[in-house]
Amino acid sequence: MSPGLIPAALLIGLILGLFGAGGGMLTVPALMIIGDMSVKEAVPMSLWVVSLVSLTAAIHQQVWKQLQYRLLLILGVTGVAGSFIGARFGASMPENLQLAMLAILILAVAIWTGFVRLENKVQTFRYIPALLAGFVIGLLTGLLGVGGGFLLVPALIFLGIGHFPTAVGHSLIIIIANAAGGMISYAGIASVDIDIGLTASIALIAAVGSIIGGMLLKRLPAAPLQKGFAILLIMLGGFIAWQSLTAA
Image (cartoon, rainbow, N blue to C red):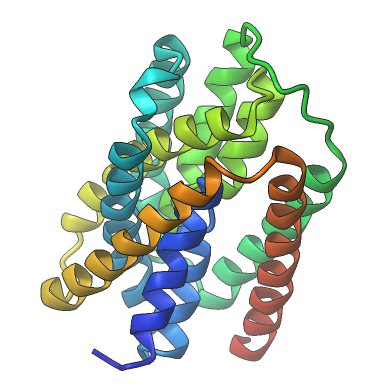
């Protein structure tokens, strides 16, 4: 493993534990740039890393104490279905198109997240929007190799979860389900090969970072977290947009 992947893995876990998002957005570029992988190699490995780290963060944060299980069921089932379909399309999609789509999505969500007002409470969610949101987010998870957290947290806020740590907890659980759907789909594609040892090493280091992120989440107020999340998305979106142009 490249030495540069060690701090990168810690950062991936830290961001994922703190924001319930960003793991896949960081993992794919890190594997490509530091690990010298193609996007076709980085995407399926990212799904494994993100799912394992999200599981660690969810256990550490004891998210089962704050979950709305009907919402999770709807988003999880539709997300897995979308992720399975997205992975099939992602395996044959041109790399620069994958990166361009990811950049546009990240920047759009960053703008929305920066201006939405958190109400610091959990309301009853709406079923039909939840069905649509779950499928679309799952589709993008499989297609772009991200856990979906950068869309899940804003979507959960839109669906009625206005308390940031609660949205993060729900996001972690759904990320696990969506990433698992993409992993199963990629497992059936003969052209995709994953280095098990490297994947496990990155996931283990990132898991440590996710625990640190979870500890910070409990201590920081919601407003700085929200703004930090939006800034993170803008930085990542700009970087990935540049990557898509250079890959063209």
